[in-house]
Amino acid sequence: MKKMLAAISFMLVAISSFAQQPQAPDAEYIKANYTKYEYQIPMRDGKKLFTSVYVPKDQSKKYPIMMDRTCYSVAPYGVGKYKTAIGPSSLFTHDGFIFVYQDVRGRFMSEGIFREMTPELEDHKTNKNVDEGTDTYDTIDWLIKNIPNNNGKVGVWGISYPGFYTTTSLLSRHPALVAASPQAPIADLYRDDAFHNGAFMLVANFGFYPFFTNRQDDKPTQGKGFNVDFGTKDGYEYYLRMGSVKHTTDIYLKNYKDTVRLWQEMLDHPNYDQHWKDRNVLTHLHDIKTAVLVTGGWYDAEDLYGAINTYKTLVKDNPTTPIYFAMGPWVHGGWSRGPGDHLGDIEFGGAQGSYYREKIEFAFFSHYLKGTDTDIPKVSTFETGKNEWKTYKSWPPKDAEDKNLYFLPGGKLSFTAPTNTGDYSDTYVSDPNKPVPFISDITDDMKREYMTADQRFASRRPDVLTYETDVLDKDLTLAGNIIANLKVSTTGTDADWVVKVIDVYPDSAENNKFTAPNTFMSNYEQMVRSEAMRGKYRNGFDKPEPFIPGKITPVNFELQDVLHTFKKGHRIMVQVQSTWFPLIDRNPQVFENIMKAKDLDFKKATNKVYISKEHPSYLKVRVL
Image (cartoon, rainbow, N blue to C red; front, top):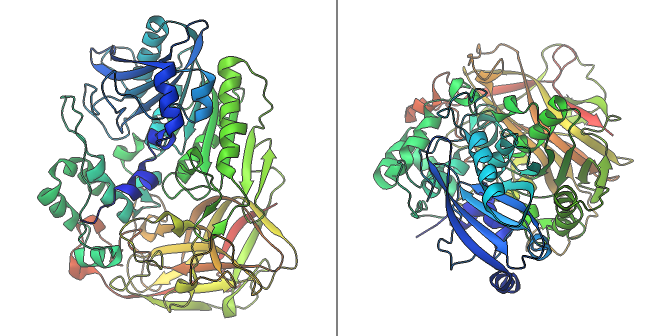
C-alpha cells in the first residue's frame, strides 16, 4: 500500500505534533515533573470540549498557561498517557508552564459539529452565537478559575489549522490572553489551502481530506481518518488517468465516504462566493490588545498567504498593539523542529530553526507571560541567497523601491522597458493532456522541495517561456511582494498563467553537502517564488469571465512576498507556463465550471505573452 501519511502530516497540516516529536529525555522529564489532567470544559451553549492539562508538580510558584487548540487530536487520551513533548519547544518544557491542549468543537473527543474553518461572528449577543472566539473565551475563563497555581496569564500558539485557531483566540479578547503566536495560520481558506488565485490545489487537498476526516456528527470519538491508496508512486500519471476533477467524488464515495461532505464544499464553490468570504478571518482582526508573534516560512507551500496577510492586517488595523513578524527559510511548520539548515539542494548557512525557537519564540512568550527582558525586533526575516537574518521596524521595508522587470525579445529580462513596437509576442502551445510537471521527481504527494527545486527540466520544454537577465555585476535584493503584470492572449476561452521567479547560479557554483546525487549546482535554477492565476478570475475571484480568443488581455496577480538576494555572478530568470500538474488541477482551456468539466473538454490552446512597448509584460518588484 502506498501511503501519504508522512508527507501529509509534515507538509499540509503542521499539527501541534510538530513540537511534540519523540524526544526520550523530554518524555521522561515530563512524566517526572508534570501531572496530566483531563477535563470536559463547558461552553456557553452547553457543548463540552475535551481538554488535556499538564501541570508542573512543583507547586511552590505560579505558572502562566500555554494553550494549543487543535482539530488534529490532543492524543494520547487517558490521564496516565503522556505526550512525549509538550509546548512549542523543549525550552518551554524545562522552564515551567501549564500546558493546555484542546480538541476544538466537533473534532475527536469534543462535542458539537465541526465546520471547516469556522466562520467567525461579530455578534455574540446570545449564547447560541458561538464560534472559535467564544469557545476560546469560555476555555480561558474556565482555566483561570479552575486550574490551581496559574498566574492569570495565558499564551496561545499553533501551526497551520491550529494557527487559525490561534488567530481566532485573539477574537476572544479575553483580558487574560496576553500573548499569541499564529504560525503558518490559515487566514482566507480560498487563498491559502483550497485555491491559489482561483486555481485548485489538487495534489495537496486530494491526499489531505481522507486523512483529515474524523467524524460528521456530535458523537466524540478517538477514531481517525484514512490515507489514500494510490497504487503507484507516480502521482503525475495517477491524476492524469483520473481525468476531470469531478471524478474525485466518485473515488471518495467508493473508498472514503466520510470525506465527501468537506470535499464537496470545495467543488461546489469554485468562485469566491459567500461560502469563502465567511471563511476569511482577516476581516475580523480589529480591536486586538493581545501581543502577537506571526510566524511563517518563505517556502511554505500551503499558508504563505496566511502568515504574511495576518501580519499585515494586524499591523494595519491595530496600530497601537505590539505585533511581531518572523519569516525564515522553512517549509510549512519547519521552524518547530529540526535544524532548518536546508531544503532539498539549497543550504541556509546553519541551524535557523533553533535560532527562531530560542531567540524569537521563547523570548516572546517569556517576556509577555513571565516578565523577562526582551529586545525582539518587530520584524525578523531571513534573507535567502545571502543566508542572513535581517531586522526591520516594519514589513515590507520602507526603503524598498518599486521597479519593473520587463520581458524582452530574445528571452531577455531587464529593468529597461521594451522599445520594439507592435503586437510582438512569444508563443507556446499549452496542452492540458500533456501538462508541465510541478517537479522533476516521481512523487505521489506535494513534495515540499518543489519550492526551491531546480527548474531546468521546465525551461527545456517548448510550452514554458523563459526570460533571463544578463549576469549580475552586483548583488540585487528583492524585499516585499511581487506582482505579475502580463499582457496575454489565447485561442481558448480560459487559460491558467503560472509565473516563476528563479535564481540562476553561475557555471562556477559548487555542490554543497546537501546537493543530491547526480545533481550539480553549476547553472542550477533555484525557484524563489511562484504562483498560478486562473485567467477567468483576472477581474475578480467572484466573477469569472471568458477570454475573447486572440484578444490582447491584461492578467495581473500577486506572487506574494520574498526577501531574497540574487548574488553577483547570478542571473534572474522568469518562467511563464499554463499547466503545473498535479500541483494545480488542469484547466480545460474552455470557459466552464472546471469542477464539472468532462474528460473530452480539455483542449490544446495557443497562448501568447506580449513583450512590446505598447503591450509590455513585466513583474513589479521591490528592490532593497
